[in-house]
Amino acid sequence: MAWDPKLYSSFAAPRLRPALDLLARVGAEKPARVVDLGCGTGNVTRLLGERWPGAHVVGVDSSAEMLQAAAQESAAITWTQADIGTWMPADKVDVLFSNAALHWLGDHAGLFPRLAAMVAPGGWLAVQMPHNHYAASHALMAEAAAAGPWADKLVPLAGRFPVGDPGFYYDLLAPLTRDVDIWETEYLHVLDGDDPVVRWTMGTALRPLLDAVDGAWRQGFLEEYRARVAAAYPRRADGKTLFPFRRLFLVAQM
Ligand SMILES: C[S@@+](CC[C@H](N)C(=O)[O-])C[C@H]1O[C@@H](n2cnc3c(N)ncnc32)[C@H](O)[C@@H]1O
Image 1 (tube, rainbow, N blue to C red):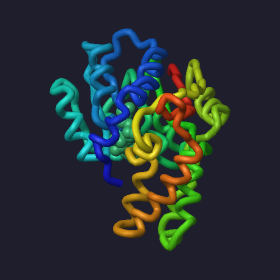
Image 2: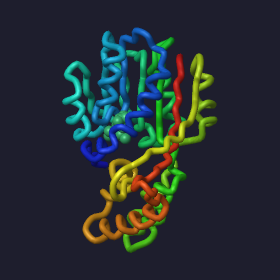
Image 3: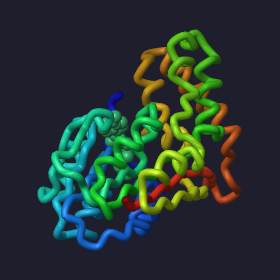
């Protein structure tokens, strides 16, 4: 799937806040090796470098477009193009951090133990993922996908539920870690402008569907989605749109 760094960054502040909330819970003091999995445009990776200036920091992402933007953030960070599903560090790492990326991968029952095994004793695994796939913003993608001649193409791409419940991650990680802290936060994003929820999802979850169709089908699907989202997330009296967004956090120490 193609990523658009500019579109993704258009909601930079609300997207950054969960990354900061996650980072605040990581107790590492002087880690030598820090990795940011799915580093995207690298703004969070740069903050990892600022928090631990003595560490060798690596940003891993599969998107050439995102890594190109990331390279502007810092020359001191090693930017690596790789798929998280197969990437392995040369040595165990002290902080394995991932903000808003692992929900793009399947088989979390296999993935999380594999990631935990990459972390050195005493090191930290810190992950944040959207846990919002039940929300109207996502459910309406499936409805709009089924609402036109594009259905055969788009229905199979809609309705993914990649992220499990907190207990699922607890059961996976508790036997492998010294301590695991799991919590959820529902942010209430206050968004400006026209169709802000559609613009938000166009930068992320809607992309695989938009990439799968073009021309009139793309336009028709987008219109079906836009109309449904406008009804589900009405503008407030002050012109703003409220977008509740639930996220799952987990911080484990080995
Ligand atoms: C929503 S962005 C988050 C970027 C960054 N972590 C942040 O907090 O701003 C998700 C990133 O994960 C990357 N990604 C998704 N699946 C991936 C995979 N299998 N391997 C490597 N990177 C992946 C995408 O390319 C994208 O840059």
